[in-house]
Image 1 (tube, helix red, strand yellow):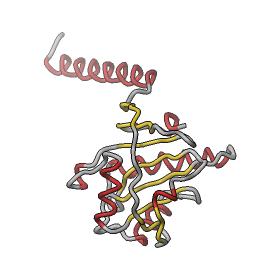
Image 2 (spheres, one colour):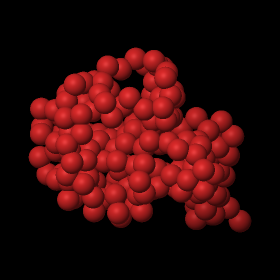
Image 3 (cartoon, rainbow, N blue to C red):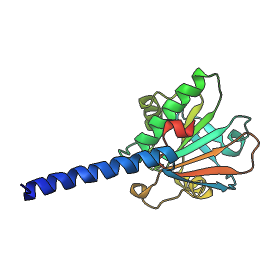
Image 4 (cartoon, rainbow, N blue to C red):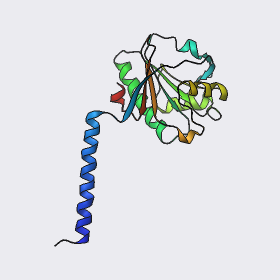
Length: 185
């Protein structure tokens, strides 16, 4: 006998089935993000790393290692933990393979994210040497965020963004969206 409860139950399972199919199609594509190629100019600013050391940013980016960066803040409970778990896993895998990659996280909340808070944040995600988190005075941090087209007026409006550059490359790869660690690899 067809009852309203059976129809609702059948509809529920149909929706679950459709979501499962959609998830598998998405997994096959690995396109949970949008990829573009960009040119960025690193601003001539001095920021503070998680150790409280002053770091001239232009010099810091003058490296022969691949660079991968993102934008986080210490009290975030949504996007930032996901990005940072991905960085942690990525760093663990690359270090195990003997590869050197420079991971960089920039605070989008310089008014609250002190070097001490950023150091604690890095420890929370088991960050190893080769992963630096930067903060600093508000104007310098905003300059960096604007240079990477990552500025948001309200930290609660931030978005998942990962930016990569190979050694010596002029172009950067901008990945907008949530990446899995395997996508990053």
